[in-house]
Image 1 (cartoon, rainbow, N blue to C red):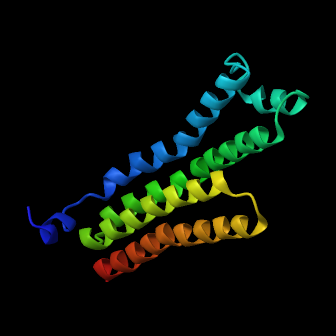
Image 2 (tube, helix red, strand yellow):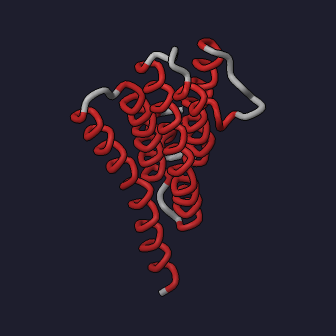
Length: 157
């Protein structure tokens, strides 16, 4: 299949599970890291970070990484519904597949970049860069929603 026709096929729905998996990846990494260091307590999973914070033997750098993993996971969970709704609205609203596919690819790449920056940030400048990546990626589903609303309005009048 030529590249031009491939990008015109409806692929955007595939981005929804990718974004969900991206949100879960930091959580899985957190569980593995805690389990490898002190043992993960699955009976009280939401207490693991608190347990590490209270443990005087916990390395500060390790604890900070665990906290960043949790933050990246939470942010992914917060971002997921907006993206899922945007993809559905874009498809139902009649956005061109090409436009929606490009937005989807940019959003997926942006979220993976966001996670990478979040997990590796150590300075204020890096945290500002993380916020910038967040803002740019958040603009994508907002664009899709507004674009869908404009297209939809044209259909009804």
